[in-house]
Length: 499
Image 1 (tube, one colour):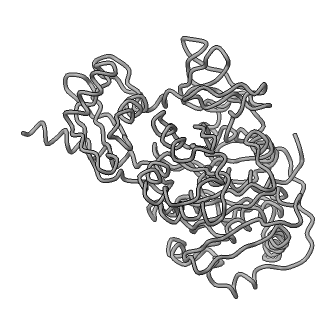
Image 2 (image 1 turned 45 degrees about the vertical axis):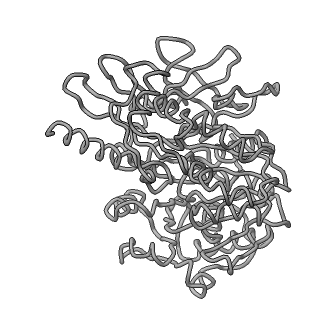
Image 3 (image 1 turned 30 degrees about the vertical axis):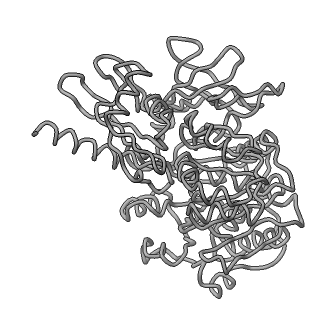
């Protein structure tokens, strides 16, 4: 394993634009070059050690995307400390749990997020320039040489199935994945990547680290706002987009703004952190005709991205999440050698779960990580996402994967976005309930959509209710809030039972 420090990814570059921080207002934009970024990372590392913090100590980060957030992400590991980004959309008690679980010795935050911090935890405010500058200790700094088991980052899972788990990611693995992904996605110094997903989530973290690896520019929005995002593409001549399916669905709904914005600079679009339906990918290809559009797969613990382009340059089939990256081993565990639960082994796989030895032993065996995701593989070795093993449910004895029903609904000409959840049923055990957002001006109703699914898919998969919404509820990672939809589905079921 390499002894490279994750925080040194930016050191290869001494000049050139590194970050365009667009801030909360279009009237206030900061452009930072690599020289300044590296000086600030060194000053941050020196400042951390000046306070008495030691190698291995955790440093929490809470706030919206901004330049200083990146300085902590790349600067703290140089000192051997471990950044722990926190999802600020979580309930206060969950944030308190994360801060306690990781044992944060110091926190960095913006103003609104400071209210989530306990008074006993020292905090440096990003939006108090004097306090930020006072903390930094300018000067040269030689990065700590990490050991194989030293974590570079402690990222917390979303907690969708219980309390969030701290995922320990090693320096060498993060450097490996940044380098191999940057090559796979053919990023260059001329690349400009737009980042609007939150930096506490792997999607944005991946984008930031591969942009730095290539020496390109990261255009940083504090949060995802559809119109600002589209306008930023034209304003900064963005070449690479990376985000989650929900973000792209909202972008495609802004047809007028897309038509009047120069989108010709965009050469690559990555859809990750969840299934990308064929309809969504096709919609993106039409809106961005000069871009290669790919649905990608990743999870915090597993690399985080184990798939990319084919080594011989074979075209990725529609719907595929790619071919295993160099250095990434994949196997499918199940009744068929070409479909089953994906296990991955590569340098980027987690070191372990923080303070959870039993969960580590259950999921990690001899370097192989059990993703709990079901995939299939075609004859050419390309992989396809089928669904999470935990999401699959039985309807009348037949297996139903929500992603398959969602993809079917999104093939309908009137449907922009779909989400499917199970609800208990006395006769069938569980039945699918669908929530859909229609395209602007579309008029399809529940009866038409149910008829479409029955005509184009297996009967057991068809949703027994189709609820049309103006928009789907979102969780803090910009993904659909499945918890909220499951509760709403239960309400519909209760209403139907009492009618």
